[in-house]
Image 1 (cartoon, rainbow over the protein chains, first blue to last red):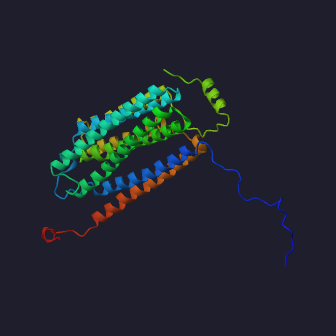
Image 2: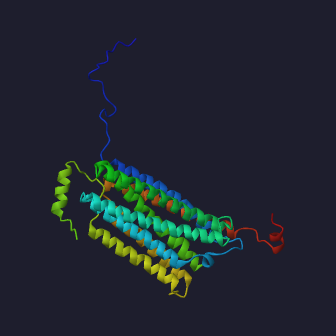
Image 3: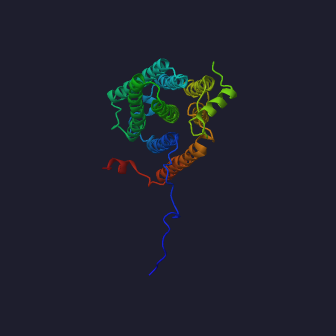
Length: 206
Length: 133
């Protein structure tokens, strides 16, 4: 049998013994989550692209969509994006009250966006153009509704962070969380660009 | 107007000590406002094109709408999401490029395949349509 004594001290190591967890990896991890979220929306957009013209003798986008309302909705989301940017700038300055103020303004614009979208949905369903009417309306409600759900959870997250910041101040943990939400919020705005261009404007064009 | 001079940026880096680009990029007031104004313009133009029926052909309008949307997405990526090839040692950009590739395949592939499926469907007479389940 082998009688080679294994030198414990000089045992080669094939792994890093110290914990390798760089400081900023949260941002990259969150970015990867956003990219996977992007795939969800890509698939919903593809579904809409395939089924968006199947009206089942029902109403078409040109009959249903109210472009001035969509324009107001879009500006709400755009304004909330820039006010979140202001909140981030105040966070950099370590100004707690101003950060909370701009986060609040962002929340109000987000709620306005959601309110207008819910009004639009209620109006459509009331007119008999609910998600069960045609393939076009099914995928329209799925795509726009998924985006709306994201905004809803964004607002829940925003309120949670406002409570956190007001209780604990702008500690590193809260700054990190605010940066993650910043990416999430701006990402939702990017998705909305696709929605208003591809669904609303192209739909009305016919 | 906060204009970040390079000197303050350096001081900021030095303060962090071992900062090698993993700290997420920060915007300035100026960069946020540039992004905001650009995105307002890039939103207003497609809405105006569609609502005022500027072009005769709807294909031209559609091309403009989709083109402006692509430009606006890039504007948002740069000015709001602070994308740059250096952040996180280039890994955010790699993830983005990979995602865009998958998105392009999923979108173009679905539209292409389903379009051909539609055009190659067996023609249906009104009789057959009426007897559909």
